Image: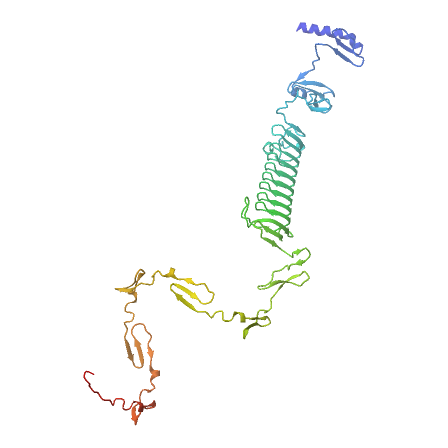
Length: 489
């Protein structure tokens, strides 16, 4: 302790003449101070060591003077007081030729992130730090803009992704999001606008509330949705739900497709919407994947034909007025005509006539059979019938008990038909009855006494009362004959 005090006193005494000069030179060679300096310290193998302390000790200095300098051991940095706060002199950046770069002596290039506007990349709930930009070295992700939540926190940083704007999210690998509340969550997806989402891989969404959710889908416009595989929706309120579907226009009709990720013939391929709003949707044109096409409205072809806009009634046909306008027309009874034959001429009312004389007697032919060949007179081709001579009709019917049998043809059981004709007739009064379930017959209508007649012979006339007479004279003496025997004859 005494030795140290002695050295201090000697040093102070030696400085007295220097203080009187208003300049101080500290030099082992005894050199004069530089005229522009108050204190000139010269050495070739030593330096100046200013006060060293922790950041807590630095902050505890009372009323620090502007320009006061200290060395803080906590982060091994020089600090000076700028009149308001302590500022580090340890520079992170350096200039090399025309390039300003991070000082490799101060920063490890391999794993150091860069952030400006906030002390950290993730949200720290400090409003002053919401506007910031940063580069995440590990993920290769870049952000610039303003967020008031976790949109830019580590879990939402896709590898090699980029996001600009307000509360944007690019969580997909190689994703790009810009605008306001835009989200690009699919790999290599792109989202630009307000409240747009590109969640499918390789999807593209742009506009206001546009949605592209499937692989390679594209949605552009207002409330446009492309949810089918490779689907495209462009315009206002357009929706493309099936695979490879393309929809343009404004508010087309909605439907439920059969296949959202594969080709289906009856799903839509191309649609043009001409609706008014989300509640009044309609289509100007619909083409299905099988090629069927539906047109809602007039179709003008090369300025030549205009089709009606409404369907016709049953039986009507399209007819032209000769000036390019088509209309549904009901046909008149032009086919209500009469055929007539006069001699050899066949005539149609209001339809002309045909001379049939050339066709006369063409059917006057004879059939003949020669052996097994059937011939038709004239130029007709004969027909050989020998192939039909298989004697299949040479069979015999036989009855075995109740079975009716045909040679080579099977048998039929007739037992169910037995005794169906075993019935009796009976007469009760004027009613004729048949036993079983037969219906009786009333015979009273036949009681007209037409059989109450008498036969009489008057000369050669046989007469019946009320029944006429028969002349028998032709039959007289026909039995007046003689028998004779001659030998054996």
